[in-house]
Amino acid sequence: MLFAVVEQGAPGSDPPANALAPAWLDREAMMERLGGDADLFADVVDFFLEDCPPHVAAIEAAVDARDADRLRAAAHVLKGVAANLSAAGLFEAAQTLERLGAESRLEPAEAAWCRLSGEAANLIGPGVRATRAAEASGAVVGA
Image 1: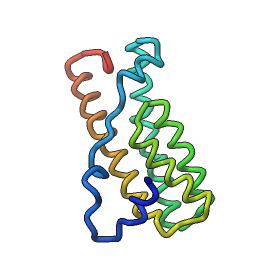
Image 2: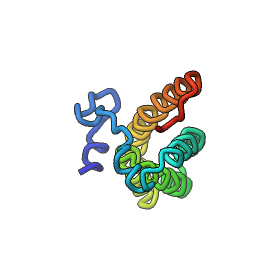
Image 3: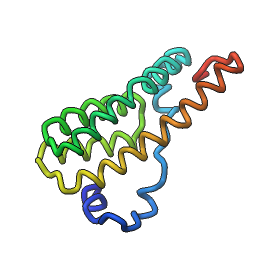
Image 4: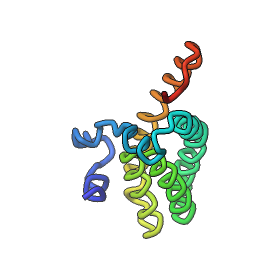
């Protein structure tokens, strides 16, 4: 179904309303996997905030270069990062790009890239703001 949504979206057309809904981090699922350890949660989120932008940039470069192998590899890495964070929307977007790269189907890659970019921004922007606010107040991030 995800491929159908991505491939239907023509440049300049309005995406379906549910495609624009942000997929926020599933904090509860992540905390459960981390045994409720708030310090570890904060470390994982901090790592994501540092690690995600270069992966997103690598995917963008692969899409721009129309390099299916690089796209598959870069999207696979980001998919793993998203899975560790319980970020379902980012995971699904990376998985779509990974599959497109594996199948050398680059026509829908630009639309899929736009979705991934939005999902990443939905996580990175609020995460950075929350981290800065917590640091400024002296609070433990992720607690």
